[in-house]
Amino acid sequence: MARHIMTLTCDERPGIVAAVSNALLKVGANIVENQQFSDEDTNLFFMRTVFDAGSDDVAAVLTAIDSSEAVEHQHLAVRPADERCRTLILVSKFDHCLLDLLYRWKSGDLPIDIVGVVSNHEDCRALVEYYGLPFTLIPVTPETKRDAETELMKIVEVEDIELVVLARYMQILSDWLCGQLAGRAINIHHSFLPGFKGAKPYHQAHDRGVKLVGASAHYVTADLDEGPIIEQDVVRVTHAETPTRLVSIGRDVERRVLSSAVRAHAESRVFLSGRRTIVF
Image 1: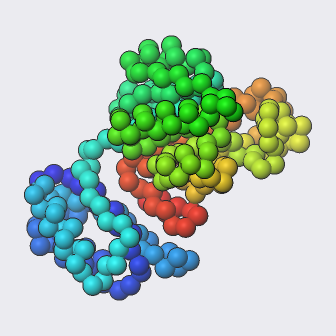
Image 2 (image 1 turned 135 degrees about the vertical axis):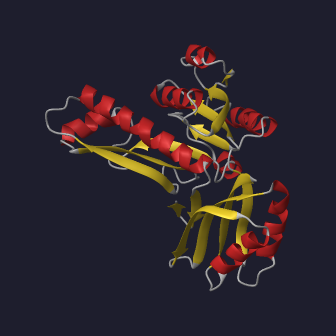
């Protein structure tokens, strides 16, 4: 017996849970965990099921569910629960999110395999190589942007990357690259958007006397910083905080939110439903 994770997205209708349960029962599988949600806005049904079964029985389970009249699925997949998500990290100069991901990966806290790190600057090379990972420098200018993105996609394809994490990668991805990475690229940004754009957003926030500092992690889309949100968090602050202190607080929130989003994706807990996500 081995542990597996099944994810299902289908049209909402009666009998879906029964179809899944019967398919698992037929092979003597044991359901360890099950979560489900019916989205009334899209009329879609989402399910994440963790079960123990023989590896040879998985194909029979998928066939039984697929042939059920109750399941008109858009997505149906099963993977081993201990399978680790092959991940590529993109970073520029700020290393706080990168360092947090590297530490959590090295300590076994995140179910991912970091294949390497790509950057448009040299600043993080020593940190990455300290962790024994390949560091690839791909400079980006307006004139070389398409060539740089093509080189990046070659790495994604050759290394069979399942997840790309923009850990404060300060480049706007083209519509073409966003399309190539749809549903498998996560970005992090501070919560002040769209109010405080451009340089020094925490200084702008300080000038306005903000009382909340937060961050959002979302899937990358062609709409800048408007992709489906996976995770968010906020911290209350007061008038006594300096701009430097606000930056420190913001970086801490960014680290926590990004790692949480990466974990949810790697554990197959995130489902896309239109412009938003369902996260179990």
